Image (cartoon, rainbow, N blue to C red; front, side, top):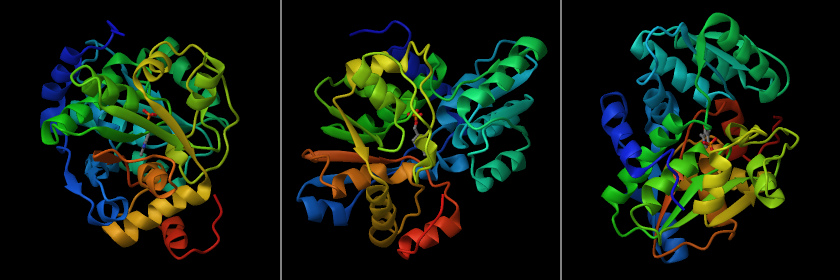
Length: 325
Ligand SMILES: *Cc1c(COP(=O)(O)O)cnc(C)c1O
C-alpha cells in the first residue's frame, strides 16, 4: 500500500514550506456532540484558515514549488480552490487566472476577484471550464494547479493530518469531507503512514458524488452535477484520475453519503450548538454523526473544512425557511 508519489516525508516537507503562510489547525472538544454520543468528539476548526477553507494548504504548497519562468497559475474551481490559489499567487507575486463554471455562487466569485486574480466563467460544469484552463496552459505558458489531483496539493492537504495526530496522538477516528479526494487522501496518508489503525471516514453528498460512484464502479466515472447545499463538494474526479481514486480506495475505510436535509442539520448544529458558521461541505461530518450514518470511535475528530457560504442561504437554513440553490 505504499505510493511513491506522496510519502510522509513529502507531507512533512509541505508542512515546513507552508507554515509561514497558514493558520495552524485549532482542535477543540465538542461538549454537545460528546454528550450526545457519550464519546469524546473533537472539532477541527479549519474554516478558520485564511480564505475560509483548508484548500490554501495545497495551493500554497504548489505555488511555492512552481518552475521558475512560468507565466502564471490557473485552475478550474468551484470556489474555494480558486480563492486559495488566488491568495497563494498574490503572496508569491505570480499572475493568476481562475476558470470556473456558471454553477459557482456569486459570493465565491467576488471573493476571488477581491484577491486580485482574473476570473473566467466558462460552461456549466468543471469539465467545460477546464477547456479554457488547458488553453491557457498550452497557448500562454500558465501552470495548472488542480484542486486535488496533484502530489503537491495532496501533500499540502495532508499537513492537516500531521497536525491532528500531533495534537491528539490517541485519536482513533477521523471524519473528513470528500469531493475530488485530495483532502481525504492527504489526511489518510499523513495519519495511516504513522498509525494504520486509525479509521478514516470520508463523507459526501448523495446529489452527485463522483468519487463514490467511481469506487462502486471500480474505475473513475462521471456523474451528473446537481445543485446541492454542499456545493464545494461538487464536480468530477477526472476520467484520467491516477492519484486520489487509488488512495481513497486503499486508505479510506468508509464512504458515507448525506441527503440535503442531513447536510442542513449539520449546518444548524454547528450554528446553534457550536456557535460556528459553516458552508454545507464543511458541515457534513457533523451531519453524518447526527444522521447516525457514522458511529463515532472513542476519540473522534470531525473536520470542519470551510465556512464560505452565502449568508442569506445560511440564514434561511438556520430558520428552516425554504431556500433555492
Ligand atoms: C474542496 C472542498 C472539500 C473537498 O476536498 P477534496 O479534496 O476535493 O475532496 C471539502 N470541503 C470544502 C470546504 C472544500 O472547499
